[in-house]
Image (tube, rainbow, N blue to C red; front, side, top):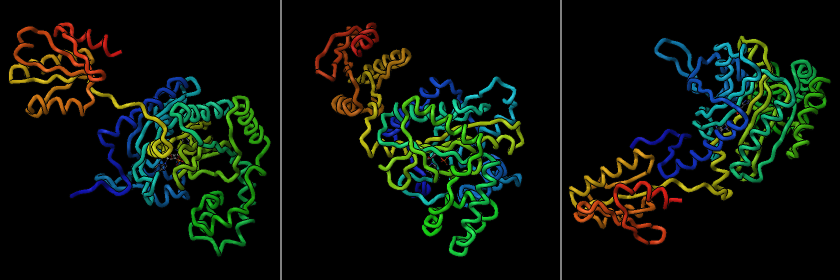
Length: 419
Ligand code: HAM
């Protein structure tokens, strides 16, 4: 038998309503925040992620699904959503639209990681990206959007952590301080960190190796190196969060795993799903558009991992709304009445009613058993007398009562009763 590839998952018919619920909630949040949906290709030129996400990141270095297409071009399955949306923004001249341009997406993403609970090779993100504004209000709004998404899903116990990783100016000073700190420890650190030392010392704070993590604990904090503008911006974001009463902690260890970030970065973290506790992460990326050849416009966004959210909701018993069920099951006794059941169902479906009939040539008894399994709210059996009288005995499954209903009035009866 051929199995599902490692690190990927099927969504089964009796589970998909949970996905739909999370996605519908995401769309509802997007609507109230006036975010417009965008869709970008599943694969992009590899160069986009190398330049956008950064060559010193684990994502680009170790985790990308890269392949050569038949034309000899290097392509990569998107490991995240931001770089593709930024490319789309530049390529389609959205810089000339009224600002800000506020977008969202629901997308699969691919990373060749070691699978474990909450960490997959194909996963899905609900993300938002807002282009064109550098004001702290936009940072706060994006964070509020993430928090309102989690609230709407009734997720509890997720903590918001924020940090500022400064701009190019303060980062220069900070990088020097980091190099001074790490230089005497380099010998003990992993090969990855040693190569990051020259290219991008900030990344050394993000290493997952235990020995490197321990050394990084004593490293200087970026918050002590912020320039006046970055400090003012961060204070602005914090006071907006305070004004709304949104609780957070400043965690100066958050640097995020992707290179495009500047200034505000944030994560929503849960302790209920093991080591992969970050359900949502994001931040400002004011340098990305110019890095990709566009106008130097500021931008900010986040992405939440849908699988991680579902895992968290299941682990903590967050209620899901019930899956949809047929409103009526129409059983047929013989060939003629089955044909009539089929016809009535077609009419009801045309009016938007979920109606079900037998597909398996089952006996009436077996049809009723199946109807029960589907959770149908009403059941009617059609036989010779029903064909003659055009009246059905409709059974309401919740209380077992039956009503005689003319076929011509079945739709309005069901609408009235299904309140
Ligand atoms: P990220 O932190 O790499 O950021 O991923 C965002 C979220 O995607 C994570 O918090 C997690 O919930 C989920 N996620 C990441 N990797 C996996 C995985 N292997 N398996 C399951 N879930 C995963 C970004 O991707 C940025 N593009 C977010 C952003 C948007 N920043 C600005 N705009």
